[in-house]
Image 1 (cartoon, one colour):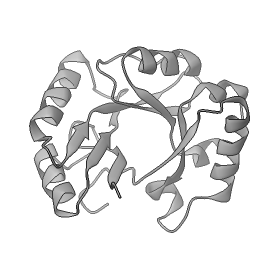
Image 2: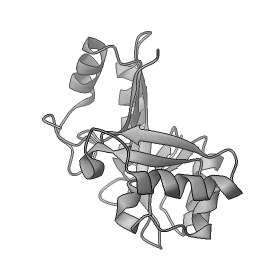
Image 3: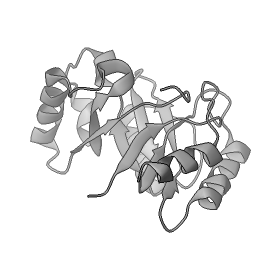
Image 4: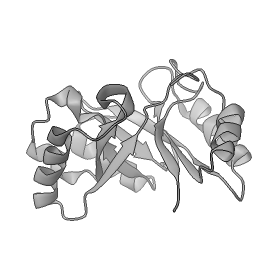
Length: 175
């Protein structure tokens, strides 16, 4: 089994307090093979900081742990999209354009914490690569919310390649 963490914020985000060195040490201790970062793109992030994030992610990655840089975008419609693996910084716009740009820059798009959107299906969401059906910060840690899974299923009807993701939405050491 491969164990990984998705939707992780570090001190590269304005509200994160865990550094990549400490994150990598903890991840290796618990047998985590990969970490998908999702630093806030809308509050203080820029090209220079994203370049430093990418360099630090590469530095703290090893044969046992891959740290993959990524960003959390807020679209014009107010949706949050995680762009895991993007290779450059950009500013979000509307939902579809943001998803398209994530793909253009080598990334994988995830609709984050759908509880914020009352789990309502909106056709604009159908282009996303995955839905975060469980977010520990919003949903707890026991199981995905049924409504999040239902939203995923409604997107999947129009986008057969859509996947599911679960993550801690880690910001602080104690999370």
